[in-house]
Length: 492
Image (cartoon, rainbow, N blue to C red; front, top):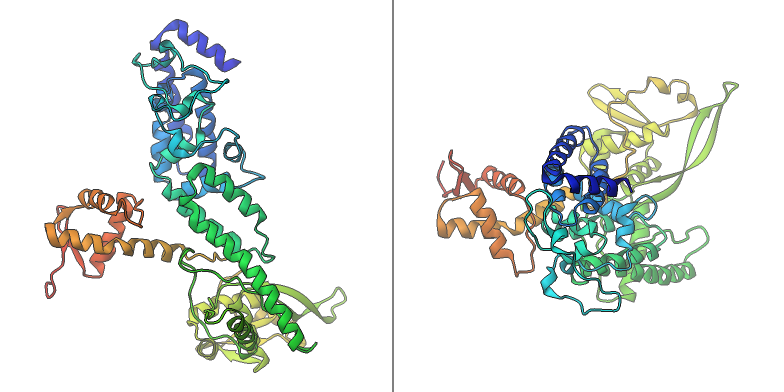
């Protein structure tokens, strides 16, 4: 009611006060909202509420465009904006307005939400409403009559406005694909019901063709559950009570998934034997297919023995359950063969860099299972014994705690893989046209890629970073006036 009263008061005063309102509101947003201290999620919430209020005050949308323009430009430059929007859109508990927007019964695909009123995208029904009058369509600031989109005739399509910040839905689809991969791979019980529900809602808005890869990803997890049940039942029949099957696997079609972490390492022989048994049964079941393990991905649940001092000062041992990565499990398993390892020996044994081993071992040091000490110029790891508990605070630790959860999707590698696709386009342009500026390369890639299987949704700044990388690789050079050209072989 307060918004409607303000609208009536401003209608009586004319466009002068609307201009004053737009100026003050825009200045307030720039001063209080658009700054590095504000979280992206907070900016998006304010933007959504502003859309609701301004569309109530001005159905033409002119006031909304003027007031929120700096907010849209600022959100476009925030790197985590797309992720925040997708997170809120798929968060059933805390998504708020965006999740409710996704569940709307009258939701239309994004393409239809942007059609003009003259397009007649749907036949009239008994609840058909005529378009607003010319007076309502007249802008409150300029007084010009503008077109009213089908989305503005409804309650207002907030999602289409958020997608319109970037001008392409592909950026949001790719971000959802990355987030879906992490959720599916971290789901240890193969339950995909919640993700299927959200995916079906997203398909209504973004289109089925855009989310076809996501459908394959969900199907892979469902198929993995059936395969895992079949293989585990076979292994239980052929194994003894002392050696039960312990391996579960998510089997993915790598073509449809984002770029996953592929760092290699050498598993401990005890762990590798379990993986080999699973592989053999899979080969029998799905011949001629073979499994290729992504060795550092996954979760290992294990029991470890640790020591602590009780209230009376006595040292007692206890067994605790620990959930860790395969790399953590492999490193600790090597201490069953030998109780003391140097950093160099452990690195060679598991085929990982010393920096990575030091980082991973920080987890076991903080769990009070392993202690690290300096011997000459080398770092020595050894299992904590009962006699070491009281002196364990003197152990030398020079690495950070590795307790944070890692993502299954390698975001940097995923983006690099995407940009490499366009390298051939850039080389072809510069070969045929000589030297070109950044903006011309950006627009030409958009033109050439449209209609192909690849989607180009990068900003000029992202393209500039990639071109700088090509310069470092001595494939391209840039002149002082910003013109890019191929670096001739033999040129210095």
